[in-house]
Length: 93
Image 1 (cartoon, one colour):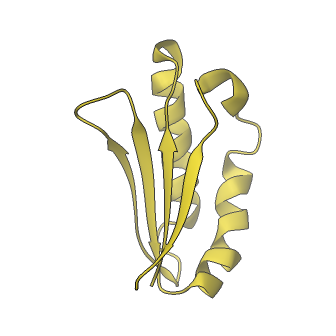
Image 2: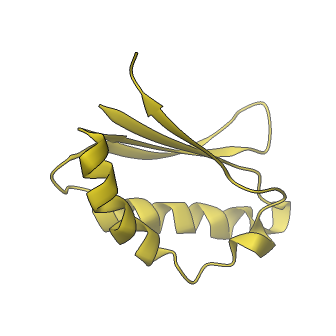
């Protein structure tokens, strides 16, 4: 199993656009072999959003990630985000 978790801190006026972008990212790979699940989540105690994608393996992530990234390639994250995206590549230990 391989997990990608991305923590986002959008500017309030761009929150909706960022959520739509995260949904497009997920839709681009949803249902493909190697992806267990993908979620867009909102933290109840802050303005943070989290993207959570669970893959069968790191190889599956490497194969599917470019497809997902292409779906949001034109999105202006540098405008929407308060800080750089905090991306975690997680492996079970």
